[in-house]
Image (cartoon, rainbow, N blue to C red):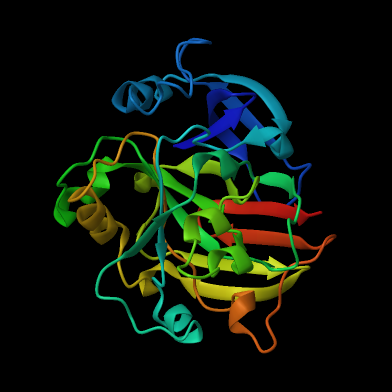
Length: 281
């Protein structure tokens, strides 16, 4: 199932593509009776939503650019740093023994086709696979962690590096939470839609040039391990987002550093999910 956000309504994607074209047409079906589910309750009622999707009927066709974030109001947003060995190396850090966990404040979460205003000349890109929690997880073992995942989506962990690294101690959450710094979408794809949800190709293109390319099988801590480690400390709630980490190729890891400038376009693609497009202003 592909769950999308159309005008604030959770809808099911029946047919359509996501190759980066804002004018791509996608056909939707209402999830249950119109108004039966909202994004304030769809993840809290995830099993009901899955059952309702079985009888969804086509209602309309719209441009993919009309979509919003597939989990627009997460109560918590978890993010994992240094979760690819090559990215840890380019950051000058050892491979971590525990997930390097921080938060992006929920107010930064936005949709798949958006313009983002750059607050400075030190903004970096980070494509990430994002997991959406569908069932509350607390002390959830890795062996059953996927049962708590509603689905996967594409994310960009935009990062203002000057604020992030500001002394006397790093300010990760502030540096990664400017308005629009959490593009997600174009929809949520349930785990059963993938041959292997732990092994997906992902790539980020800047102005059409590939700057990041890897597979999620290269994650140091898999989604299951992240859920086990994080939920051992704090409950993970339905609708929460988990940014799982970025591969190598980020701007700060280049010589000289390569930061984003107004007018540039980021295209972030993950196998089996699709593409989101972020235009910098």
